[in-house]
Length: 232
Image (cartoon, rainbow, N blue to C red; front, side, top):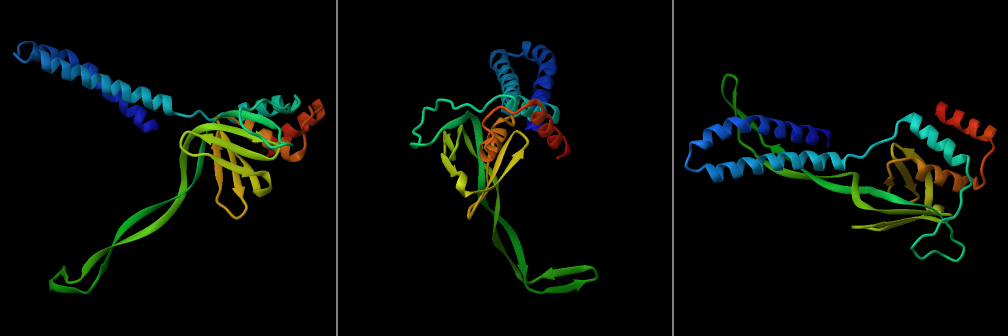
């Protein structure tokens, strides 16, 4: 994304610098109008690419910001919030926020495989008499499932997405990991799921729910937790 942003601004600057020279050239041309329109369109497209690229960048908090978020989170009680979704009888929601979901997608990659002997026709020159054929390979990798809203309750993760919705029960989570700007779930008998929220609040909320730390911690407990965070 950073390369797209840089390329967009570079093209916009170059087009802007070239505009005066082009204007002098086309001023004497009978096709002045259409040429000027094309120049304006090119400049506008370059600027649009740069703006879209800038808007698509997701900021990742630095470690100092994450530490402050941890201190703020632990200093206050984890209180239930209202969620516009259907919950179970004993289910309570503690987190709601914008997120982008990622899951394992399998892509197909193709490569050529050569078969057959090579015949020497001159010194350093060989003629291949065989044939090559394409071979496909399945390659798994994390890919985006699109944006949406993430809810974290005392029982599960609920992601309501524009393209895809996902529900993961706490009972099926083998491990919860904090990743830059989000939280990752390793699912028992399944594939990992990751939610990018742009901060550590979702991960911290999950840790508190799992450890039963719903009440506010004392200053000493907060300091101890922050020291453990710094040592990690």
